[in-house]
Image (cartoon, rainbow, N blue to C red):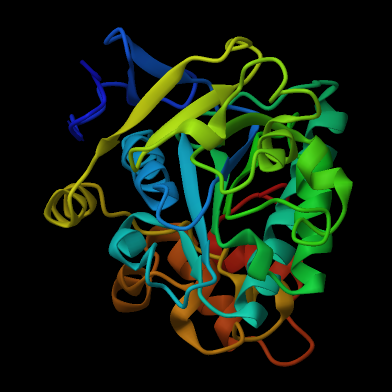
Length: 323
């Protein structure tokens, strides 16, 4: 009897921190599939209909419970996949221009964190509620424009120490689709669903994987996959949890967030994000920041094209110069 013959009902994740593994499904012997994603880039790949969106949903459902992690989203299907999670995402891009803007912001924050670590003489960013890890979910990675691919490459190569990482879903991670070998080689965690051709197994999991028994072409059920990462080095079939649209909506509603003031893409580019406010969370537009952050926001909005002096901002907000 095939233990994966029937879909496996989703169960709400228990962990509330990104420092613990994420549970995304069950192996054939019934043990959970636990994946460490802190400071790791994740690749999810497989043919159309193999179940990539289901795994993205399972990972997102776990991440939204983590108070020490920010979720950013890029959905190159125009929002079809990630829109149900919009209330739990700190930023959501649904167009090529917005994707570039969001990744530009991520690279800027990466550089800022690296500078902070260097100033403190520390090598690794430890996530907390006030200084969370940043996980960027990208659906249909191959559809990113060239500018976004270059930015993603930079994040994949430099983001580990500062806890900025990628979760990329794509049908076939060819060199052309991934924008070069650099990003693919930086994917520490690889979830391979059903593939159409045998050679695609090596393309996703690495050269020689098919010969070593990673038979992704033989997977039959939607959501069945093989996991390769530092903790999982032998082929073992697994199946992802099936989370329904109703469960996604209810879970997202329970864990909706408001992004940190001043970190929307427009704050980095010097103007509104391309395409309007689709990159921003509606909660933020409705309520805005409060307290000292609200005073800072108001002062910056009232500043002219030359900006505002730091001394004036300190006086108006009560914030210190380092802040």
